[in-house]
Image (cartoon, rainbow, N blue to C red; front, side, top):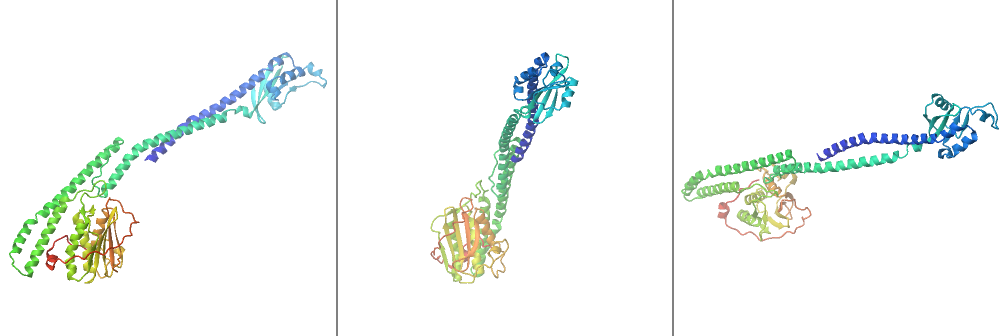
Length: 486
């Protein structure tokens, strides 16, 4: 839009400049020509008094040479028949026309002017010749010829054209500058509106547009802000509806819990009570998540956050009991200090459970695994590595609905996609590589400021941490947490 406005202004101004400058330049050229020929007529008139008195060659020659154009050879006099003065000349002869000065005009042009009795301008070599008829004392008509060089006819025209061109260019540049400034006032609100629409599409629901600029763009900004408010309200209603629907499950769950409590002792009763407790916890998690989730702010980060170290310690405590049963060595490092990340607690727990569940599902019993947490200033890096067979095609494993593990029957392939979406929601990413244990290493890069972390900060040492203590087989069966997804 800005460049289009500049082009329109450039075209209009150029047309106006051409419409005025070209005719004005032609007028200046005509004025210069008229000035040159007016001077030539004045110079021709200086010899007229002499011609009205005498036609003597010597007298006329002196008169011609005494004038400025005659001294330069630009003035000539053509007398038709000097009479007796010509007969008395030492040259002798039967009489004829008398030419004084340098002739440049053709004889026929001189004769035509003499017969017509009107001044005429004819083109000659190097310029023009003004032929001015003058009456003699004898009643004959003499012709005075004044040579006007071409340079005098166009004197000052080039300078005038240059000045007109300079003024035209200045006008065009000025109009383009003004159009550009006006275009900025129109384009900036449109760019802000487009950027806000893109931010809203990316999930930053707190984005709003300043209601500035032309009337039409202000109206568009008002409509956009109203639409964004409605979207936020609709999402809030949807979350409340999800929470209400989940809350309705508590009544039948209460009945199930009471019935399960009356089953007595035994493996089946214990499993039923554990399943009811797990289901009740999941319902509570859904309700809490639906009501606590907030739209993303303008900076692109969720208002909800958690301590990554605390969540990882809690989930590793849950999985350590199962690891003890299967004889797996577990190492944990980097969770000895608080690390705040812009990810909701349930989302981080679900992502970690998805990765650890993949380790238990796709590696043989007894395979060691480790979880490392590193803080790089603008990002938090979580490494989940194992000593298993690895992933044959890491790129395919990152595709939603695809599992890259060999022999991964029964896997939906959604676990890594869940983890990837958690990382990308903070401006980070998810990568799969070969771990130092010999198997797969999944690296979760979580941005702390909503910006993509620097690629150069990948050199980080690995620390062998403490082994997670065994909390008992019963705890592994009864401890609740977010479900494992693959």
